[in-house]
Image (cartoon, rainbow, N blue to C red; front, side, top):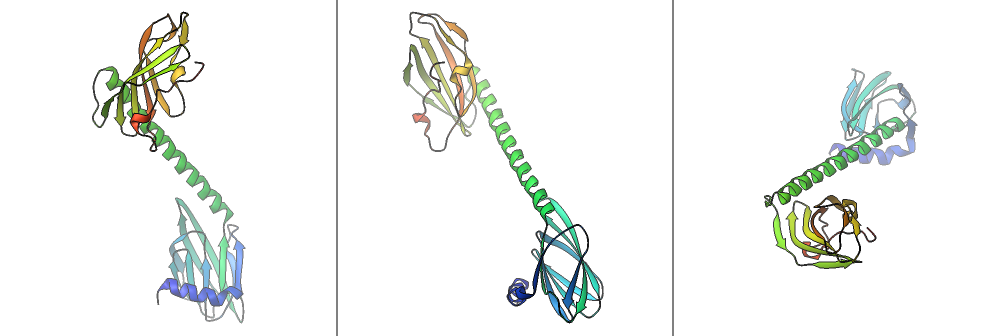
Length: 248
């Protein structure tokens, strides 16, 4: 019978003699039955157990099985959860009664593990953002130099969109590596000057913006622009429109 099956069978018998305790960074003293097997459940994966000649201890996952004889003895456990290491120690007093199942709760470990998980998520988020930004910068540089970077597909586009007195026209879409470069022109159709800046093109998913000229546009003046955006999985490149904030 495997160690896990033994654990399951022992738990079914021992729960009525169980004890749940909070770890307080000091040796836990327990009264246990003589010549019995005591199950200790820990909040982390056991790496090693330490014991003397008066006891035998085996580990499986986060459980430790301690074969107690008739002499008082001690057991030490080293375990790990995430990148957090913890050590636990138990002093066992064999008697005519006592507990056969002990569950250890460790709030400090829980908090340390929570901090570890949050930090890993932040690292991953920063790494992802950094990677996207680097790809966007390389794509922008290639487009401005008139080059087609490796790993990108170039799609011709004739999309036009009129917003107020401004006309936006796309010419090319550079698609690849989870981003899209939108190349086009913007024209002032008004009889009056219109003010436009790179911020005008920023919306959700926009990474970088370049426009040939910022500031006031004369009537019928037209300039080129490039917008780099994240490419959403649910969208096809042909369906994307030029990002532009109304009222910009």
